[in-house]
Length: 119
Length: 113
Image (cartoon, rainbow over all chains, first blue to last red; front, side):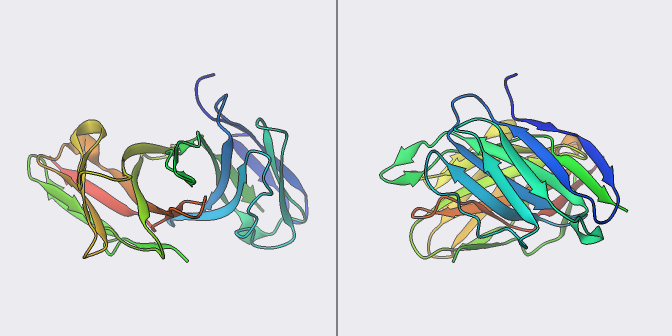
């Protein structure tokens, strides 16, 4: 496909269960981001992957959250022992690293999101 | 640290009137600035960005934004609003030395017929 693909689009789980959310970025995009959007709120940064560099995990809210990326392709966001406050839409985005000097000027392309509901 | 403020939760305008959605930012270095739009139950779509050069940036769907360094602002504008412009608008900033993109809380634009 031409865009960022996320799956599942909807996930309902019980409190305490683990969930995995998947993101397929646009081919050739070296940067990949995960954001969380709670109902009626803005985007909360979770984690950022850029090429082979160590990921920026500064936005992960707790050690129950982790993410991996295979090379420059698929990424998986894992939430262990889910809590009700984890209910949100999880958005993935990718970008080219269009550089101006050492900086990334590329815009992000977003997937449709994975809506997680924890009962 | 970098941050973005969108002071208005909601902006209401009548169709055909000009619209402005406000955004101010804070970064340590030079900013890269972005506007995105989110339609209901959809992901975010890129509208425009400021990297360098001309302070007035033109983007998709007739939107434009003006970068004002002294006021640290990057307000989104459109000369004539359409009902179909009704959506949630996000401003975002990236410090030129940092990879992550920080978003504002969003402003809901409501355009009445």
